[in-house]
Image (cartoon, rainbow, N blue to C red; front, side, top):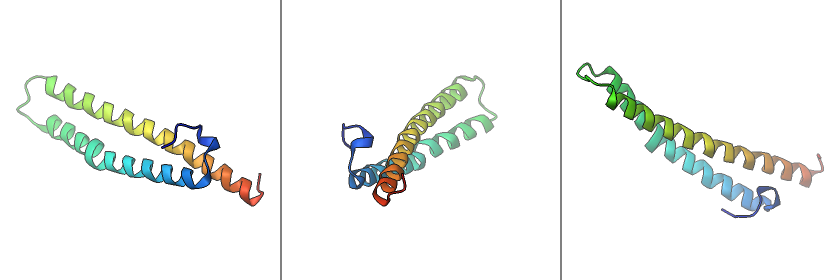
Length: 94
């Protein structure tokens, strides 16, 4: 992905970068967020857990994973807006 401001990227680069971010987000959900949520659920349902340390640790990992996904989604939203504006400019809809 380019270091240039999103608004100055050509449409092709916007689509390519948005695709990469989408793949990264999907991968993160499949291999990060969802497994961590499942782990937290298993930990919470485990009757043998005496202390809350493992539960807190699982919750902390899930929150970190959620925050990463949220930041990635925000970045992706910026690309969607830039793509929309670029297409509107090309089609004369601005």
